Length: 165
Image 1 (cartoon, rainbow, N blue to C red):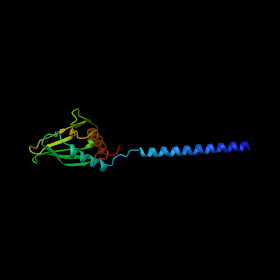
Image 2: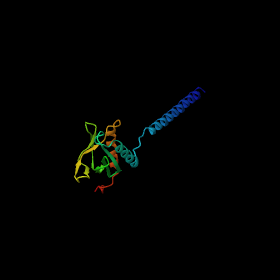
Image 3: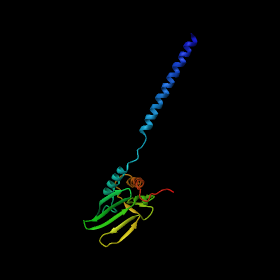
Image 4: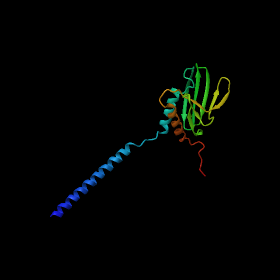
């Protein structure tokens, strides 16, 4: 009789241990499931970049140039600078042509690893290439976040992607 009671106690302890382990595992899985970060979609990334360029994309917030006509796609970003609705500067670049960016010490721009941004002056027809993408320091970490968004957007560009071999 004693051994039956002893074995019954062992069985109860074993059942409690299994239930505890099962409950603990379920809790861990639930917590792990809530901690996974979802990457932004192409559309969310495009909308975010467009919004931030429209809001902060100016090489000098104190001057009279305003950014307009911002267009964002995975293979092309373009915009226009207007000065008092007369002088226009058209800018564009392919985000996938830039492999890395860095924040300028002045915190007024981010800089591409190459001269990838085309600038065209409408009034005299001149153009040049630049590595500078001007963004006013209007939000916390805006430059670092823009870099992350541009690199993410570039992953959606199919232009120039061919077969690996």
